[in-house]
Image (spheres, rainbow, N blue to C red):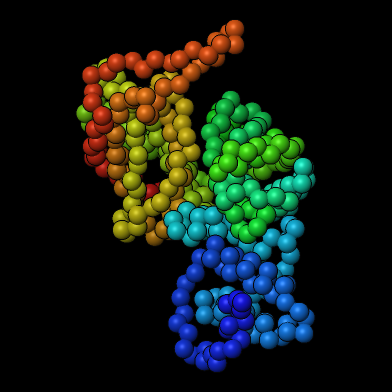
Length: 369
């Protein structure tokens, strides 16, 4: 049975009939991977004819891909020039400029048939972002996790929040992005020890044990801070925008929240989400970096947003508040006692029901130039 590339060889193609369309980094990588595997299976005597058909298909996808080849990298993983944007699938724009300001690492560790290579890393002064490639001798599923028994320790930090995103590129090849936000770090240098002791197949629950260790340091990229200390209050909740940090690729909003005793007696949680736009009409996409506080009502947070428009003169911050009641479907758990036994954590009774949402007044920040 002929595959699609053989069928293309039998078609008379007029390249003027193709409609140009934009494709994402993810789609480009998938096409390159499929083409590479198909080309490698064919007899060399037919190679010229096959390459012509392959080129025609790439042109049909996007003129941006013309001239791309299939060099090897980190064990024949198809070239992905910008893993930040690849994993974002070029949807949010948050990672559009991360590659430009990152440090190329190319650190590799091999364990139990799985090779992990740290490609790039960047420290924006708040969060460390690490991209990496995985080459495996077995299928790890569509979205394996490195967080199951992995940890990134940053010297001088009192704690950390983090996230991980791994996706499959082709058979046995994956790329990932891990973000770590250290709490209490006062240095402008992040000294990182990243240890992965297991990779989890999230589809089957299988754990592949190994020993992947990395140690490296990252200086914080240049940033400028603007203190704001502007607050808004509504329905017993106060939100204060403490400061904003501006980097060449993003801006980071530091804010805190507190709630009255009346709110605490009625609800288990008061959650704040920020919507941010500027005076030019741009609406900014962001990702939370986690937070710390004494309870679910008094917390300091930070959130990273995409690169600021240089012509903007104001930021308009709109806090969205959600009150929640916890039950067995969204909360609860166990704690380990001193003697090693599990103790169920009870959910205190509150008078609220379900959830309640409202929008607070805008906080307008005049940008210093």
